[in-house]
Length: 416
Image (cartoon, rainbow, N blue to C red):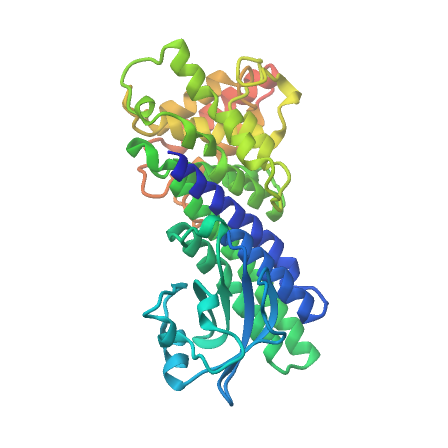
């Protein structure tokens, strides 16, 4: 389990590196400074002590270093001439390459001013299928090998470092550069979301009955925020918080997830600790959205103070946390668990209405009703409940909404 936790921490550092790379890649600064920032982020994500960033020029074919960190003996600049076979091998590589005595000559020549043997791993930087450069990584602490988790982190980051290197290499007009930078930023935000989706899937892997749970909670939370009129950045924050809300479960004993009877007090305490463990994992990570750590810690808090771990009440619970709490509970109710069969959509919504406002924010529940109703009437929007039969009529959802409104307004009913 320590290995899995370390891998998840490594992926979190990779996601953090992505958030740092966005401003670095598009800021108005000297490329030498940008390349140093990019290389540092890549080395941190891969756990490397030594690294160098090389630019590739085609005529003649040569790699020339633009920055190097950690090497005791590295010429400035370092250059490595390449034969056509080296260029082909680097361009054809599908990801980072762990080097050994039999592969150095496949990818690098020994005719430059730096020995290929200094590098233990190569990450080709390709943009549009063309080689733009190479990141060469040296030793890791304790002479550790580069494992799959480090190679995955490299692959995530290097696609976007390649865009910056390619952008630097192109001679562009001011208008072209602005356009390219805007497209680059858009791709980074999209990739950040994709990286967190992959991370959400990794969180749920311990329990076959909750596969997809974190992804669904992220999707439900974003839909609720959208129905409440939140701006796109707030909606993106909710989706990311939903993806990460259960990260602390990586530290929970796997056997508890399959138990068919009620947890005893010690087991419940261990399960409940996933909120504080998760908070410890994410609190040191710099996200674009500052509320993710508190959401991870408090997503089991309830308005009446019956939740955990801090027994918060009413307005002490931030709105983003209340939204994740409803999204999390709704998915838990409507999916199979070892101790019970799933509730129908209608039964789950009825329970949420029944428990508002004592435990759940009625405005959040109302927003969920709005989104489920859109599914029920066949809205042209992307369905909230993808792949799930919406077994409740729009009229029944309207009745639940009216009941909820009656509860919180003492008889003043407002239809949705």
